[in-house]
Length: 472
Image (spheres, rainbow, N blue to C red):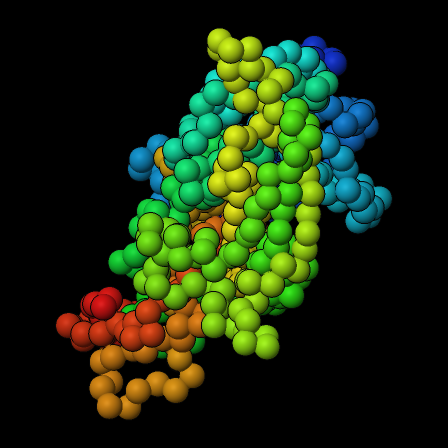
């Protein structure tokens, strides 16, 4: 068999395939025929996706008569969690068979593409009703009512008098539509997503994410191949196996969207007058810096306010004049007044809609992709990936020769990054996690680490050094 065995970094406890009640009592455990699989997380998507590579020597395709509605319940465990009993359990819908390859006369290789099973529950239901209250409360109530799945709401929302009639959407579509109107006091967006480590939905505002300390602040991910012979290579949590930086710093594209400097008019359909808003992204970054929401030193951010053309700052140009309809007064009757979907009273509240879109664009302006060992993300007791801050460090190109114990870092690439997507690859022997990260701020220019050599040990007959890292 090609099954994944117990000498790997993880163990598949079970992988039960069933037919969603199409045929009664037909189940089969695929754990012995799964060759590899990958699970994907994304902060913009309210479900996980996955693909599984299986070897079929037992007529699985023929016996199950795949039609696209089958369920795959998988439970797996990182091998170091055997003592704790923590496992990760997920239910997937087999959405499609991506390809089938005949290896020989008796063997087929199949790649199954899957999404979390609650997407099927959502697709089978339709929401046509009104809700009122906070957008986050409406989303939480809706998802619990229709999908029987709780939502953890994290962050502070500014709207508490909202009313909406959902226009013929399924529950997930409804939640994502309402989420667009959920904004923090600073105008930062909310994200709705699910993760590998917990079973509930997470609805969290960007400011709440950026306001926390990196989860690895005392044990940063470091890309330093030249130190592979030191104890950095023995502490696998530090080691970045690979990284990729591409399609970065496209400020022009953000400018062309009207998210750097622009003029907006939100047209009031009740009074037939526009509410005018002047948007300057520099004001946004200054405010975020004051509120310590940029990460890193909270002093260096990824928009350079000193850029000018003809002695005028980029953000002071009105590169776009944008008009949007903003219906008002639909649910105002002099008693219990509620805001409709685009309803706002003053220009400052309308500006927060622009701030939300601008910050989302800048968050992925300077992305980085790193590949690390997956062990730290497979505990099954919490979320350690998307929506969390991590500290990533790169050595500078010219190492200091004045003090061998001081490591200096590239402050352009190094920083506190928000993980907005992740791919976890479970192969024949190990787990590797590729994290897709963005940021709004950077580390200070004088960020260094002191390396203190504290003892010597013998490992496998080789002399190695243990290090203590002091982050300044």
